[in-house]
Image (cartoon, rainbow, N blue to C red; front, side, top):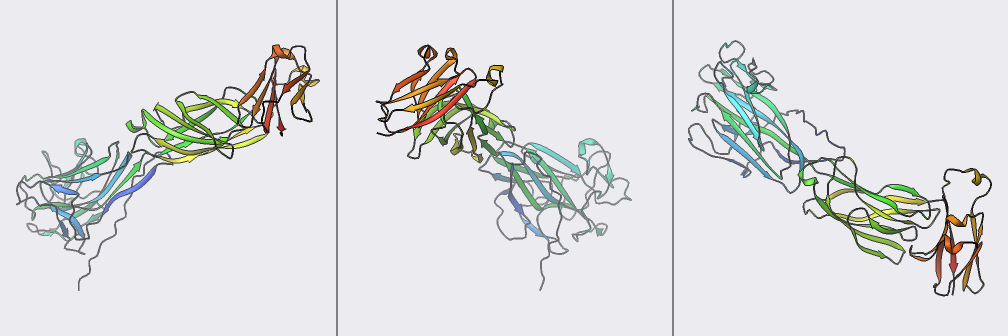
Length: 447
């Protein structure tokens, strides 16, 4: 009984040197050991004497399966993908069988492959170093360089397949490992393999070729969207929280994008008022006092470093707290694209001393809340406050401003009384803004 033996070929794969978050996957791998219909391969036969249909063969030595033998013809591999590519790598072994003539003063026997429009061509020789006419080849350089190397130079195997050129008769075959990296934005991959043989009408007993151990790996476009960790001072108005995005490679699929995202955070910490780009299409507060913003943006361009796609503008409310900023989802409106990584952030609010002025070394502005027993009013006592630059605001737990007192209304007053008749039971915040200082205090109303 004969056992089929497949010699192990170690291949050096070209690795895509793009961002670390690029997704690499193998989309095609074939060693042609199985008996099946290879529908993804095609060819056109013009003369069956020196051309073959798509078929597999077995080497005389070691019974190694491969795609071939082929003559002076072209075979095509077509793959259709459902993803957007940064680039892809193709690796395969080329079997150069029998009397390839290499490069002489006019033209030699050439193998070429074209990957989505990028053409690579080499000449090969099996005639041995002693041949003066045909004993040279262009490989490992392409034919257009004009350089010549000895026959079978750079082959990973020599005379290992068991093919004999009857006219000599001596063993003549070699195996070469070929690779190509292709930067591409197409969803389809078309690879043309061509034998361009000098004889014009070569018979398979004279010279032929085959393909084995083909591997195609692609790097897909990979999107990362993130919210930052940020710190703010309570009472700050016009505060910006950026939404960031980056992509593993830039091509036409990363330009003029549009998206919809939902972002959740504690409603008592931040009150949104708008966006630098796009629009807020929904703004709700759930039963757990989480605010959920639905944001839509159009005409967005993404780069390989973090790009600000938009910024949420609003007012910082509650002090001495931290709230997660969470993506509920992020959807590109381009159907074939998907966000692969979502990185949530946080918003921390705390009292933060500004640049100290001389007067602050002796007196710091302060205020005190005094509520009546019946909760019908609240008194605000001011201390060390310059009323010319002071405002007072009352917010509910949802971040909605209910009362605002400007500096003109405070003029000459160190005790301000505010009616709470229209306030329902709940937790509220009083924010004093005085010069460079912002102070926030909470209070409860029970009815």
